[in-house]
Length: 435
Image (tube, rainbow, N blue to C red; front, top):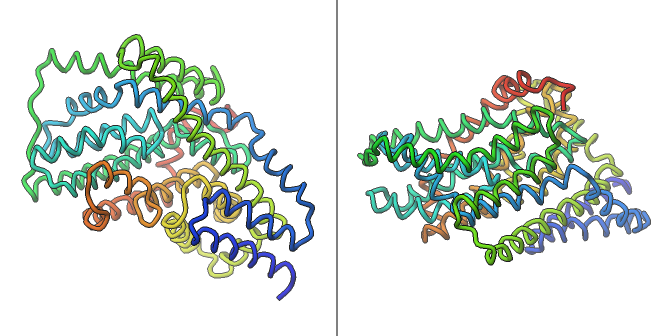
């Protein structure tokens, strides 16, 4: 085995061992990179420079503002209003509260961009309400966990900003627009499944809402939903960058939560800012560590070798894309989302380009794969959060989730093999070359 091959094995094995030993992923990335650099006799100053360079990007400034916006809206009473608005729209359908759960997650995810925040905020309302209406606890938790994954695809999503950076400067505006149709498609697929179970298990419809009450609910929800228009509309129209849009939306959400909803008190801002900085520190250290790890991968020509290996198995486009999806689904079970985006994007992007898939479609496919990973143990953070909120064991909820996994995989395959699902809206509203 040559020095290069041994260095690759050293890098990957040391990383795997550290993860298995339950070291934080960011530490595992940095330690394995340092060990490999020492073996290759690469100056460690190179790593320091790479760590700094990885987070020295203007586009990454959007991330803290998106996180702050989600925290403000989560603490400002947005969850109740979005739930009531969704209930007004679909509550009267068979299995109404299950549909409400999916639609509320679609709205909330489009504001916070966080699946775990969706579960923690809306789950406290939805799960007890569904149980009281006659739904089983496990089904209620399963719907809550699965529907929360829409928040990763429907913009604004800070994971899309991370992918745009890892892919070498992909248009964030086009990525945002590309997420709408797949996110809605996922929601529709989940609602079809909920309708099937509602009829099979005789779940109830929701209560009828008067016109006066519907108008009041719509007016209250309007200010929250407008934040999505500010972010995506402003970027698409070229009024401001994604970073500026996130900053403006954060200020807007603060005004709405304090002055209109009046549920966010100034004394609560300390906790909001603390949670923002806590989440941001984890994201940024992952970006920096993954940057160093990616530099070592590139130095050892791992992306080119992996591409040659995949293309050596088959030159059939369908087979290659299926293999990539299987790989991502497996990795999503054992690693968190942000490091996987940062590590796998530079490795897989050249492969998908060689079979005719563009950066935008691949970004949506990648995030959809990793969204499923949030529901799969042992690292299913969304699944764990939902079980914690619903006070149930993981085994019984996972069993109830099996049909939802199937629907999400079907959606993933449609996104993979039907480019129009991801590309029609961005090609229409923001053609290539427009930023």
